[in-house]
Structures are given as C-alpha cells and as structure tokens.
Image (cartoon, rainbow, N blue to C red; front, side, top):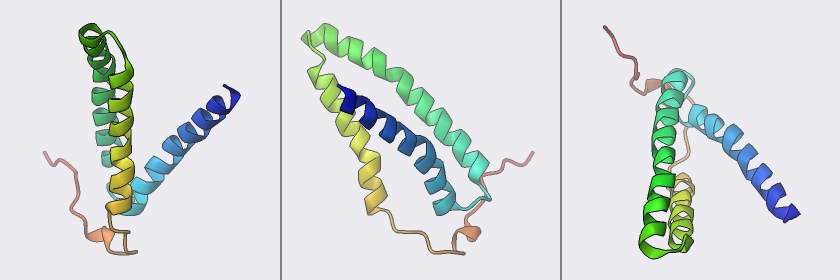
Length: 103
C-alpha cells in the first residue's frame, strides 16, 4: 500500500512538471499560454465525463473492472503519442502559426 502512494506521488509530479515543459519544448514559448489554456479546458472537460461513464458502466455490468481497464488504456494513449512524435528541432518551432485571436 505504501509503495502505491509513492508511485502515485511520483507520477503526479511527473504529470504536473513534465507536461508543461514538453509543451514549451515542442511548441516554443510564443504560444505557451494559449496551449496551456486549451489543454486545461480539454483535460477538465474529459475528466468530468469519467465518473458519469463509470457510473453508467457499473449500472450496466455491476462491476468497475472494465472501467478501470478502459481508463488505464486511455491513459496510455498520450504516452504512446509522445514516443511516436518527432523530437523538436531547436529554432524551428518559432515558425509555428500563432493561436492568438485578433478582434
């Protein structure tokens, strides 16, 4: 049980520090604030659906096993995408179009 808490703490720290650092590394600091805002909006929206999906699945099947497996597999998608994505080349990300909205 104790090792589970250590693993949770390590992975949470990795998520909170590595995610923003990877965004800045891949897309430069020019669009950083916009990208963080979009990521926060998507993560919050998708995370709010988790309990609803889990409840519906439990009501249908009587167990949470399939929900845990599905959510674990969904959590592996970003990890796989990270390894498949090409590494950024220094100085090239500066030419990325801005996400700024002009009024």
